[in-house]
Length: 156
Image (cartoon, rainbow, N blue to C red; front, top):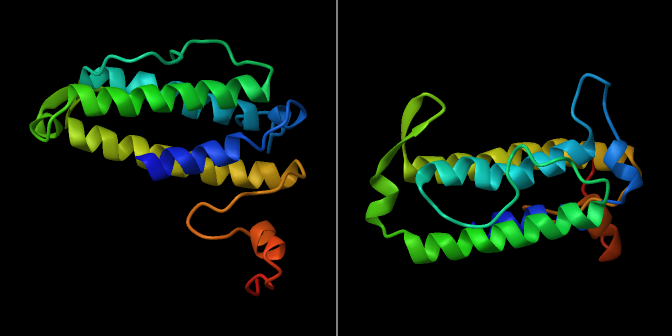
């Protein structure tokens, strides 16, 4: 979870206020809306497991500041990790909770939260490129980072 949170945080820290409006189409989420959705999903999903921690709720309005989004995610993910360490045991991961009309083991919910962030980070990187922002690597260097290391990026 720490690596995934850090990877998400790296992307959020690059966003600018102007970039938050970047969209593929008017029918799709903007870059800012995706970033805020990732942030608010921490509480929305994990509070259903019984975890108690401070984080923006899913119905909290989208901030107009990229810094507020990045700081909110940082604080929420740190609070989530602390809550997991203090409130869960290995056995907690096997407990079953209601999740969107289904019964999910807590460990599955945590796994899906991680996959959820991964999915939306992919969307963010495309919108970040369209907005002219540098993209940070997640599971290895990005094209931008290869260049910074004076190494030719792999062929496309």
